[in-house]
Amino acid sequence: MTDTATPPKGVGPLARREMRLAYAMLLPTFAIVIAIVLGPLLANFWISFKPVQLGDLRPAVLVANERLRGDLAAAGDRAAIEYRVRNSSRDNAIGDVGFTDTLPAGLVVGALDERCSVSDEVLTCAFGDIEGGFRDRVRIEVIAEAAYIADPVNPRDSKPIISGDADNILTSTEFTLENFTRIFSSDEFWHILRVSMYYTIFGTAGALVLGLFAAQLLNTVFPGRGLLRGLFLFPYVAPVIAVAFTWVVLLDPFSGTLNSILLQMGAVDEPISFFGQRSVPISFLGLTFEFPVALTTVIAFEAWRYFPLSFLFILARMQSISTDMYEAAEIDGATPLQQFWYISLPQLMGILAVLFLLRFIWTFNKFDDIFLLTGGAAGTRTLTVDVYEQAFAVSNLGAGAAVAVVVFIVLLSFSLLFFRFSPKDEG
Image (cartoon, rainbow, N blue to C red; front, side, top):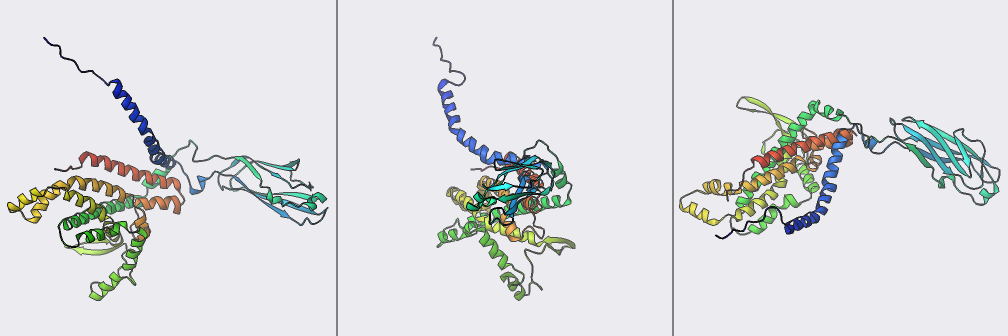
């Protein structure tokens, strides 16, 4: 009876060496990801739990401005060196504050501020602990000697050396939920969240639908197809500031081309402010609702600008589908619409799902388009615009970081649900 060799169990020495080599080669990538992605992300989470204002990015310091009061033209002339000192912060205190400065050679100190002392031409002033908004003046009287007149040196050429200890709110271990409480208790935040979802869903769907139709159109053979494919890429490759300015000019209520055409046709009685009008009442089947004009226009811009990306991916997938299926369907009497619905669309579900995920994330994070078109006015303010408004317009960096955390959580939740339930290609 012949013994059958039993395969070794576990990982062999060669496999372990290859695994260690693979990890070693991936270490630079891990380091880059941590530095570029995780570092700012963790910093944003850190700031979101702190009541940080824009001015708190720099810790409080003593600021000293030096001036020479008087004219030292001859030996024996008197003047005063004046220091205007202040706390750079209106709220935060600084402990053990002081400064030192080197006086020019040939100047003899006369009257001296009680908080200062001079040793070997080095002036030392101590203020102890100072509160936020502290301002004061230090006046040092000096007398010029012949050595100074022979070689005059401006006292301001020597910069004061500042010392002091101040708490930095960014590096402290004090945390608060004030930022999240503030944004979640605001009715405006929930309105902005609804606008963001409306803008993202319809902007993403519009880009995919336009890209699908463009790909279906240009998947057939006709003269000039290559040129037309290149022209279809223009909205995506053109600079966003150029195309945004073009849309603003074309849709201007006073001199815009579209409004002029609508007025000439009698379609409207007065110009429409596409980017400045929040909504208009529309009645349909006995129901009246507010139609968001500015937001819909921005969504149309989003779909027009980014459909070429969807068009490229969908067209590439279409061209990989075997023509035998279409020929068989045509022999069986299937119409073009039936061929698209039962053959093309199932084959495209995988790429459409991936494009929807990418476009959803990119659109939800979109800032420049809305900011250039409306500045977030007329009901077009999304969460990303709100991050900018909170952090820089209102100077509440902590609240802006908290809104950014909400954006991250929404996108993370959507991505996890998408990967759990996303459809796949049938091919």
